[in-house]
Image 1: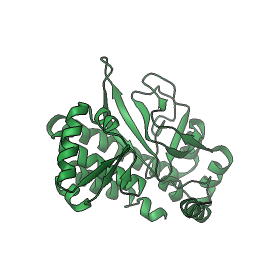
Image 2: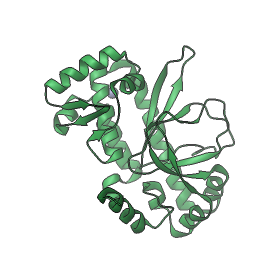
Image 3: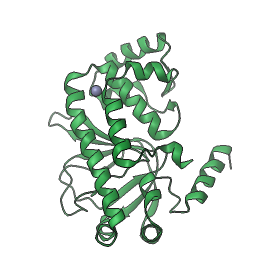
Image 4: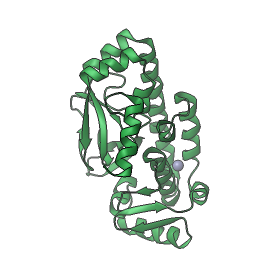
Length: 255
Ligand SMILES: [Zn+2]
């Protein structure tokens, strides 16, 4: 077992729940975590996997571990996708509000591969029925998800692509807990709804300025403060909202 695997196992042992590193699960009371231990399963998600699509039944709620990033995206008729929200180890996706009683409106896609805990939605409903803490926690997260979607309306409409790229990289670094993000420029372009050549030109400029470093399918945040300065206001706006609604939990709190 490598050092990273060892650290991961230590975190799991510390949390003692489903092998999970997810903040929502970590905040649940012991009785609720026991229900997850009994009915949830740990799964591996590959990049590009679609967990559910528009109009489909939602069967599972996913709680990503540290390092896994999911996206809630709108699929347009011409095949293009627009990202509305990012979900990492701070959150959950799938039936958070409806518990699967309604078909999905958007698509949930795996942006950065990793592991997650998944729970059949009927048990999410059971948790909400029997546990005030779980219901409040899920409601708070649903509120934060809505905030992300609302902020994305303004961001996608008015903010320049370089500032949106910086915003997205900062959010992703927070979710995965490391500065090297395993994504190609092609994937970044797809996520931001931009041309590959546009991302390539912006990437080259930001690399020359010493903010980022691109190599072999990864982008590294070299100068976090400079990337924060270059990002649009949406990063800080949503960070304030996340802290207000979820108590400031990040991957660092789980280590
Ligand atoms: Zn923005």
